[in-house]
Image 1 (tube, rainbow, N blue to C red):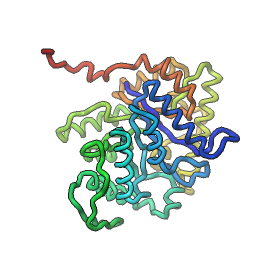
Image 2 (tube, rainbow, N blue to C red):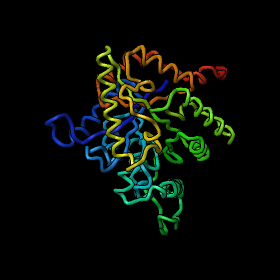
Image 3 (cartoon, helix red, strand yellow):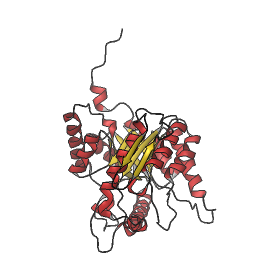
Image 4 (tube, rainbow, N blue to C red):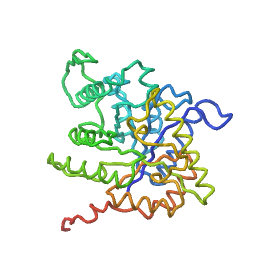
Length: 346
């Protein structure tokens, strides 16, 4: 299996630390993750939270690119309705060049009520804005000639977007999806798939099976590494540590729900699609002892998951424990790759 990091960063550090220390802590956390053998990091983008959550995602990843050599640098996700697509294409291409082609471009439509209201964008426009921005960014990265775009939300006249990306034809696109219709759209676009941290292994197995069928129906081969599943993670030494980690995780989810949910709204996409009323709800996380985490990873692997990205709240100790006590048991090729016949040596 392949493992990466997923989550956010906050500008504030520990109590009494100067503003910005949290971003430096994030950088050091990921530098160590690379040294421990993690494959990637996927960083969120959010605005108007009140707790200084990362908003300039590409800027922070560019700083990280300078401190790392092998770590893939991903967004999970850049919310396209908030951005001028040409400027975003330019900034992302710059990061791809500076990182020597290590950028993974995760994109989404947005789900937080406070962001839609803060940017004065009606939620019902999210999908149309998302689709138009994707079309512009893709054309910006693949066109070698000047082009003009006149759409519903954006107009550009006789432009050639610079610089070009390092990866050709462009950095890999990743899209978060959960419903059958949204998964079909990801497959139709030829993108990679991000699955959420809340659904069960069985649900994800069904989603992967659908995605694979849709990919193969379009004449493409399915790569298990084109799907990643997010999970909250903490490796606990004992029951007391586990319960404390569960309580922290519950508190963080409630904080997110507070800014994500519109007044009177019960359900929606992403985190809003799940019930979080029970503070002990833990079945689909990787929070627990080494044996408990290994059991849950085995269930994910049996469901077809080969790539997991994890949020551990910035805990370096959890990161180290996972790398030393869990990761070695899941090293090696994906099962499908291991079972494929190899070419004869000459």
